[in-house]
Length: 343
Image (cartoon, rainbow, N blue to C red; front, side, top):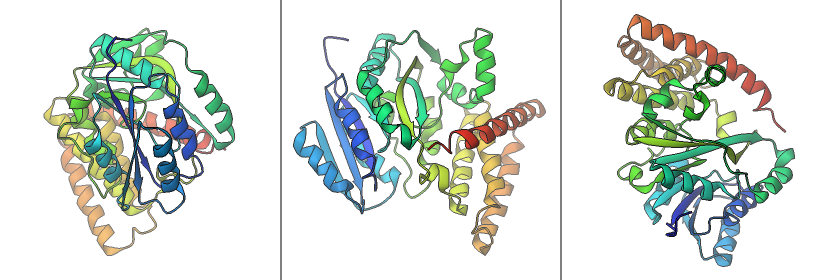
């Protein structure tokens, strides 16, 4: 580690997380890298979460608690970004567990490679595993075997997302897995300036998808560490697993369409956004509130927009997008059966 210890701000949006909140915050307080600003944003929680956060603030002067009326995860993340003083920014979900060396290793990789963002691997776990995972996280990960650096992260985000194709790429010696990342903000460390002028759109789902294109286009280099540094709790009540409203699918369509246009403007084939858009537009019709007249009208508008956007693709590019979507759908079927049902 360098002699200078830059400040790292870790932002945690919190809403009704009393059951698992301590696991998350404890894993942050126990980080091997200690020069932290820990911003815990209470997004109008109605359980005991606000009191738990205040307790942590009294115990550790690195903790800062922000209480606000409920406005959703985007509002909470934005409040954290606005309050952050760190040279580097990290995020965590309020029920996940960070490896003890998460910030230490991510920061070292970012500084030593001159990257704009560093990322590591993560794993999913079920509630029954939480004590075991928390214990392993406290022990700390080993040094990564490889730190890979790649350029043009916007292109990697859009084109490297099918797990089976990543495995094939690795077998062929292309180190494809290192280039994979999604729009989630956790298990990353960002240079602070990447977020200048960038904030999450409030009042919508898929807020992280909406900013992904612009954020990744600002980066020249990304460093990947091939070691697990983050543990993602699979909770049956999470929005990702349970939300099925028309608004949820429409917001995902809107975010996918936004990134699709952004990628076309930057000469990047928007394969992931194709998958997101086509899937969300189709899934709108499966929502329980689809029969509302305003939702049916919005669906027709979305279908028209989808057709207009896809008309920008050549026949060859549309073929690539269609094939990768079918591969990803098969992978999602397996994922939903195995991972989302973790206990």
